[in-house]
Amino acid sequence: MLSIRKAYYWIFIYFLIVQALAPALVGFSDELGVLFMLILIALDIAINKNFKRYTSIYCVVGIMAFYAVYSVVALNFNTPKAIANDFIIQLKPYIPFFLVYAIAPEFTPSEKETIKKTCVVMSVIVVLLGIVSFVNMRIVRNLLGHVAFVGIITTLVSSVYMLMSIDKEGRVSKRDLSIATLMLVGGLTCTRSKFYGEFIFAMYLFYLYKPGVLKRVKIKQLILFCAIFLAIIWAAWEKISFYFLTDGIDGFDEEMLVHLARPALYAGMGMILIDFPFLGSGLASFATFASSPSVNYSEVYRMYDLDKVWGLSYNVPDFICDCFFPELAQFGLIGIAIFILFFAWIYKKMRLLLHTKGKYAFAVAMLIFASVFIEGTTGSAFMQAAGVMQMSILGLSIAQFRNIDKQKAREILASDYHNLENK
Image (cartoon, rainbow, N blue to C red):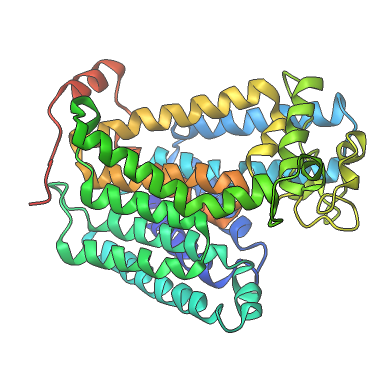
């Protein structure tokens, strides 16, 4: 009988390693890892006869297949080859989540230690690259693709380290908490405001947050919440201003807005949803790698005159797949609703952690949950190896609740919070 848990453990280690060593060197490393997962699923079905275990994956593949057929039959914005390419990319973050959610692997103590050591090594490598970026940015770009991944990867490895450090009582030792914090401190070398905001949020979750605090908010807590929120905005303001207001130009000029790539992507998203409200413009049509000249340039850009925007044109396509959220226009309001409901469902499962595993398990999941949305505003990490790890961590965090019914969930949520303090 095939040990699906053990096989997944090695795939998990693989993804931890390729985060830091392969994004730019081996462009298909994340797709290769997902292929390993699909092979694992096929072997589990063939050898262990666990066909029903993967119902959720069949549903996700079915939804994407529907959009692929819709894109080929009902629309004509890109080639079947490009649509097939985008079909694979769109599935990439969801397969890892539903795989780990289905099998709910429990790592042994020795495996957890190996994972933790791997996280430390990857963190050291990435932070060193962050330091090197102050001297030679080309080295970092050649290895990671972009210095922003220094922050993204340290968030991932520190979260995995914390997840592997939580004991059966929901506690984390001071030593492990300090190591995870140092990893995040090292991530500051990415010099990216988005990560600064995530860092502040992580420090709040790890050191200040207490379960149920929102139910008993007092003036003191309200001031603290406001201060943290303002600190996150302050930390990220440089990027907010750069991406959405001035693009680095002193003084805001409304007429300049149409010439900026990222705002143009969001504007294009709105126009697409007006013209194709229900099912969107289809796969490989907008804001994805498959819609760029690297695969085949989508007709949507010419349709809305976005091909005249620097960064979105055929000759300068650098920013076509630079944001995740605009690409949701490909799926229309129905697809966006499914996406929102999916993450709302994940958050409902995450709340159960506060009553069963304690605040640190919830803090890890919440940090990754927030990271998905923060990074998605001005980055496409969700569609890359980072997204695979983000969804894997979320899946690992809530997998224990895969078979829980609504009545049991309500009983858990009505119970006392678990492990309020790190004793």
